[in-house]
Length: 83
Image (tube, rainbow, N blue to C red; front, side):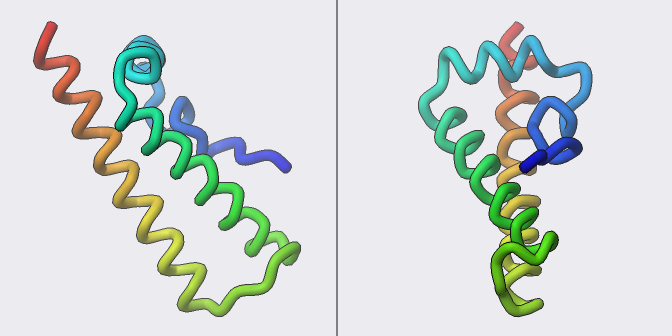
């Protein structure tokens, strides 16, 4: 199953260098990236009818994914500020 459009490189175009460095250097970032990946997969399965969930549950998952993206954006900004 493809998550094209929702992976972190698609969500943060032009930040591949920072994403890679964070993945190598930061355990908390790796945990966020893994959670984002799992959420995106779960959302895709629900949207494609492979798993069942209420509309409320789907929206809850999407909100969690947006919150994770905010955290990733903050980590990227912090890393850029250190350079």
